Amino acid sequence: MLTLKQLESFVRIVELGTFERAAHRLNTTPSTISKRIAELEEATALTLFDRSRRGAQLTEDGEQLLEHAMATVHQAQKILELKHQPAQLHRIRLGFTDLTALTWLPGFLATFTQQRPDVRLDITIDMSRTLYQLFQDGELDLVVIPADQEAFTQPGVESRLIDEVEMAFMARQGLVQESQPVELRALDGYTLISQGKRSGFAQQVNRWLHQQGTAGATLTTDNLLALVGLVTAGQGISVLPHRCVANLAGEDVLEVIDTAPSLPRIGYYAVFRDNSRLKLMETLAQHLTEAADFTQPFFLRASPDRER
Image 1 (tube, rainbow, N blue to C red):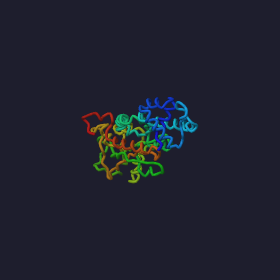
Image 2 (tube, rainbow, N blue to C red):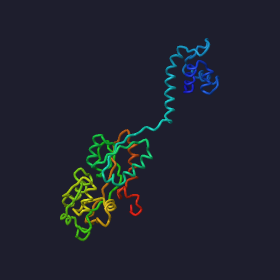
Image 3 (cartoon, rainbow, N blue to C red):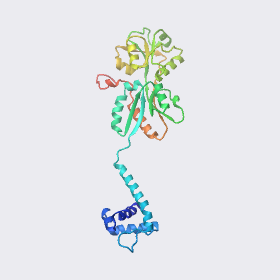
Image 4 (cartoon, rainbow, N blue to C red):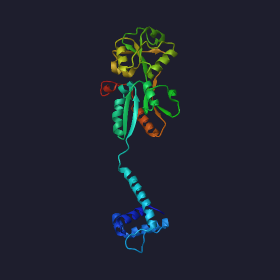
């Protein structure tokens, strides 16, 4: 049977000129080296050294085998060196909406970069429709966006539910005078503020409102914090992730408007491609799921006086 030790012994004999030097280099005995060469000649049915001459003189067969043996020993050495090399750096381009950036993304990045120094994350923050278009164009590898799971049922695209966000109509304290729960039709008398058409979040809310026979938004802004500011200033009502916004603005400023029917939760999904890096993407999606918490702005998480 042909072995790597036989080939290595053969190469070292040729390099150093004698069996004795090869044995010393390989930390073994000349008799062991001789045995390996005999086994190699038997395995290959070749006579490698001219034993009628002094020193380690190669035969023609030995010359032919030498090139292959050197290449094999070299490749084996490179394989053994892999364990000493740093892990390959994986670059992943991620896209998130501003709600994620406002809540759990900073904490996720701090933890994940410590756990996986072999992964470099390039982050884009934008509206969900823009992010999904960048994903479809191949400019992002994974996006976390609000949507119905059916939206991603296309070949080669995988999706994982990251978290569901509890939604509610919110307004400045005292703005809505009707007794609660409020019939949705009664809200038509107020200005409804929402994010714009590039927001998947707003799209789902408006779709649900139309299904209930209620008009959509009459005032829009793409910036979530600007939207919260308008509601806080009493400019209208809005559908918001109420636990996050209540922690941001304070319970004494805004109130939840209970409605009949009540709003559904909105799912946030990690969307990525089924390709050669699927295992890495699935691992990343699992880390995202474990980190996801849309209930509190990241800059308030250290405060012991606020509930999560």
